[in-house]
Image 1 (spheres, rainbow, N blue to C red):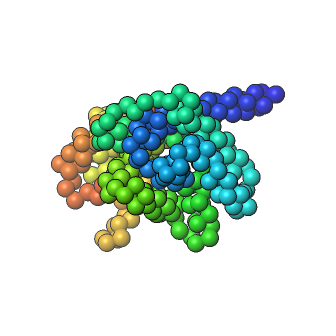
Image 2: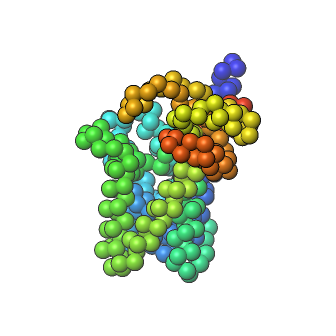
Image 3: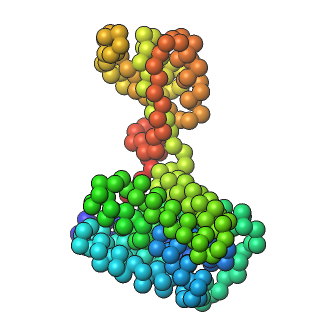
Amino acid sequence: MKLDKKHLRRNAADLALVILGSAIMGIGYSLFLIPHHFVPGGVSGISMIVNYFTRLPVGLMILVLNIPVFLLGMKIMGKKYILRSLLGMVISSLFIDFFQEIIQLKMATGNAILAAIYGGFMLGVGLGLVFRGRASTGGSDIIAQILNRWTGMSMGIAIMLIDFFIISASGVAFNRLEAPLYGYIVLFISSKVIDMILEGWNYTKMVLITSTKTDEVQDFILNTLDRGGTALKSRTLYLNRDGETIMTVIHRKQLAELRLFVKSIDPDAFVIINDTYAVLGKGFKATQVS
């Protein structure tokens, strides 16, 4: 019973994220993207091009154009994945038409740059929340997964190629060279915002340090930075020398201090720095992605 309640709460929380994200997307489309004809790629981008010529509602066209995509995806990806994508696609499409056709929100600004920036931001926030709700809006990501299965092409490259083609096509459709240029801005901003929503704003740094001064580095990390770490046995390939590599996770603001210290005591130290978005442990607040 406890497991069932926990499962229900999780599903309710996911649904709330999908609804909230879809509402934000719908507002962004109505206030910024549709009035300026800024195509963000994917099936929604094709729908905006169709809307430009036929005045058919964007949300309705997203539903119609996604039908063959979902039928093909169901055969390849399985029903469970497709059902979650179908949920996100239907809710987001309804919100787009609700704000655009029923509420009829007016264009928020006549400034194209501002529209691209804020439209991309709201699209990114909305999609990020939908993804956090373990759903999707169909379109490019399903097509990309199909291409990945058939051709071995990476998901990132597949989505980039699909969106690039659709955004570029908007320039021909609208007979405006500027249209795809603004579309690329929308795509770039929305992609970055999606990453921040999924991975968190306050990411930390994982640092790997190979040095002959491991005792000094260890003391600095423990006592000055007040952080922990792990000493890993290692062997340098070039000198074939055994030693230790220190692995630690620190806050971004501590990175410069650590780099300066390591450089001052061992100019020949080898240091690798990576962004880390989810850390479980004392002193860090984990970012829950799924």
